Amino acid sequence: MEKTTLYLTGELQRNLRELSRRSGRPQASLIREALERYVAGQDRPKPTSVGAASDGTLDAAESEAWLRNEWRGGSSAAGPTRSKRKPTRSKP
Image (cartoon, rainbow, N blue to C red; front, side):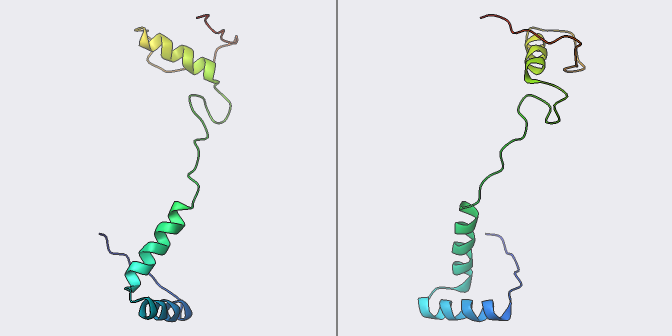
């Protein structure tokens, strides 16, 4: 377990101390439980971009084409680049 120092308002500290006394549980245990519940209830951020530039300068089709070329042993080491014509999808 890791140690963390918290600064609490006087009122919160008194309430925590009283709850600890009434429940027979250590203050640290009450704080851990409250933090675990709080953290579990938070939404995790979703990625803003997967396979394409988040600013719209590169689309997913261009990234996929570059990856296909690299997987096939292509020679471009610079990564995906913006082409003048729209990439076409290959048929399965």
